[in-house]
Length: 156
Image (cartoon, helix red, strand yellow):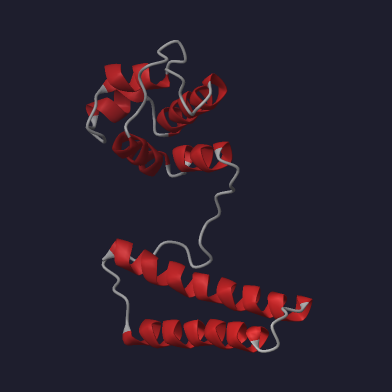
């Protein structure tokens, strides 16, 4: 069976697990404190490069990243797929935060700005560089609002 991921990519995931375990205080301390669903022996196997068929489950990877205070696994996964991982401008939402009416209104306004930019750009059947820039700027602003709302939904 040929896997979609390469040996190099899977080794990078092992490295992320090792770094998260180390930053989180070590496999013994994490296991003893029951900070994830697996104990010290499995954490050690997940981080061992010679154990090429044992990897941390996504829930364990999240636990380890949260304990470590850094997104080791998320960063590795993004990088291995050609993406950069960046913190949201506003950071994480406060636990228990809910989207507000102001968020909904802001969303509607930003979506309308995208709609307007697209429709105005389509008017003559040709998108000029300035029109493309405006559309992309409006889309970026809408994405920011969506990310802020998503963070609140995740924290609710």
